[in-house]
Image 1 (cartoon, rainbow, N blue to C red):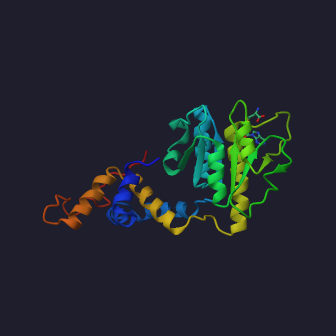
Image 2 (image 1 turned 180 degrees about the horizontal axis):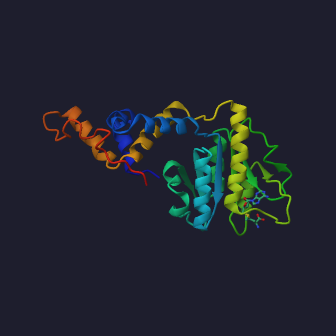
Length: 253
Ligand SMILES: C[S@@+](CC[C@H](N)C(=O)[O-])C[C@H]1O[C@@H](n2cnc3c(N)ncnc32)[C@H](O)[C@@H]1O
């Protein structure tokens, strides 16, 4: 799902975007962006199938974002994935969402990148404590009412359960996402000996995106900076200091 900021980076490159925008942010804000980027984990990912409750969708995004999961894969068979903004509290802006028509398509793409794909089934013999995390792992979650579809189960390499000790037979969907992702990201980070694993080129691009997301009117600041650099004679750029840390509007939404 590309937007205006993605297009800006596509056209001008992340280095130019950063060159134009970094002077607008304080050192503390830049350090915070870099700290979160360093902790982004690509090798543990979640796939949610046909979620229909916007609160569950939003809670899944918020949990994945908070745990530093780089991408949430969303499969829309019958239901469009729509997250309630009041529940994500902005978390959706910092997550990569990838949309797929079927779990099988997503599983095949991830498997080609070295992931093992696990389905979640209450009562499964393997648990989130025992599955192998020495390779990248993707976990599929089923819909609130019917759980995973037969097609989704067939597309997985195996089934994993969250241990349960009470009378209930399953957890709520978004709670399951949080429990599984919390355990697997913790285990994977311990095995890697690092909090994050994004390749440098992905990080560079994401850094430009996040810096732009923080600044209202980022696109026009970049366009003006590029014009000033390439056509200084005609550039109607800002007066000196116009885009300084003091004058730029930060987007805190
Ligand atoms: C509310 S549950 C769906 C219950 C559905 N009746 C079933 O039997 O799968 C929604 C999703 O949460 C996950 N889930 C809930 N409890 C789980 C457990 N104990 N182990 C593994 N996954 C669980 C699964 O992904 C499930 O599809």
